[in-house]
Amino acid sequence: MTTLRLAIVGAGPAGIYAADILLKAERSFDVSIDLFEQLPAPYGLVRYGVAPDHPRIKGIIGALRDVLDTGRIRLFGNVLYGRDITLDDLKQHYNAVIFATGATRDADLDIPGIDLPGSYGAADFVSWYDGHPDFPRQWPLEAKEVAVIGNGNVALDVARILAKHADDLLPTEIPANVYEGLAASPVTDVHVFGRRGPMQVKFTPLELRELGELRGVDMIVYDEDFDYDDASRAAIASNKQVFVIDKVFSQWRERETGQASRRLHLHFYARPAEVLGTDSVEGLRYERTEPDGEGGVRGTGEFRQLPVQAIYRAVGYFGSPLEGIPFDERRGVIPNREGQVLDDQDQQVHGVYATGWIKRGPVGLIGHTKSDAMETIKNLMTDQASWWAPAHPDEESVVELLRDRGVEYTDLDGWHRLDRHERSLGEAEGRERIKVVPREDMVAVSRPGEAATAPSP
Image (cartoon, rainbow, N blue to C red; front, side, top):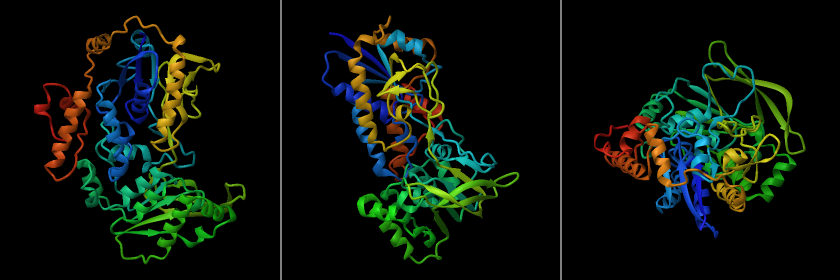
């Protein structure tokens, strides 16, 4: 029977779901799957892109762990595509590759002053507070007044972490350096800006409710933003999520404020126009907008400005190009047709596939990734005639390649060691887990013979 040797680059939800779907599919060939991940640990954005106070969302890790623990997938962590292993290498060892590298960069916001010191991308901040090993361990939290630009879940995560009292994050897996940084923050006011109205937000009711539960933080909304147009009223009447969001806002508008030490402001119909300042961020200038009657908004010509000393843009994620793989610079994705990668002539690149955010862009929740992977796997299975014919298809040859190159790769047993170590660190402080942050320490814990002398985070 034919055996499909498949490489998947990226061990986040997209890559793991793709592997699981293929293993469970009815097929006329055997399957051998290797997952390559640039970080020493798996799970991608679930581990490094979800706020630490989101235990419900992080429950997805349990399902992903079950897939890896079937023993039918090999994990090669701490392996960077393009450096440690290349496309030519993959062609020598596999019949096909699926890229599931996600979208981890911040999308640009093209307004004057956006590059001033004190202006940050939300993705970088998320990576810091989630203990990503490739980001500095210190973050400049010196502003009393902060602006967050965006109306999606990431914007609310960033605003919540900035406004939340650090002690309330201690039950989570927040790294020690992050707790210390947030505990010393002088922040008093966090302002969230969205250019559309409150009934056109991109965040979920769950995210919104969580904001209102913050201890010692007043939720501030402004009556001028709640003069609904016909489209907003229709959305409330026809969409359950929008109905709940309206209900939450209505409750907040009736609350008494003024007693809390911190405030979280939500500004709608506010289009950022300019970051103010000379040597660093000093304020934000924005234009009031209004509904245009066609589902969008238009400028009113009324400009306002607000003093802030830091700005976080949370206007979306953007994919990164991969060596030897076509890339759409405008959309930040690998060009593809239902997961089949296309060249610049719109012709299929045989043996190369994509799934997840690098395939379709950073839209949808983690659960949408399953249906996305199903589409890619379906096409992969029907493309058997165009698979690569590897010269070295045996499984051990890849191990030898990485060893010969001196790659300190981590495997599934190593992840289990790191997982146990992080849990033991947390248990000592009455917490579920404390992440090990430095890459070299993660590798030291993960690789055989080194766990006994593993350092603390």
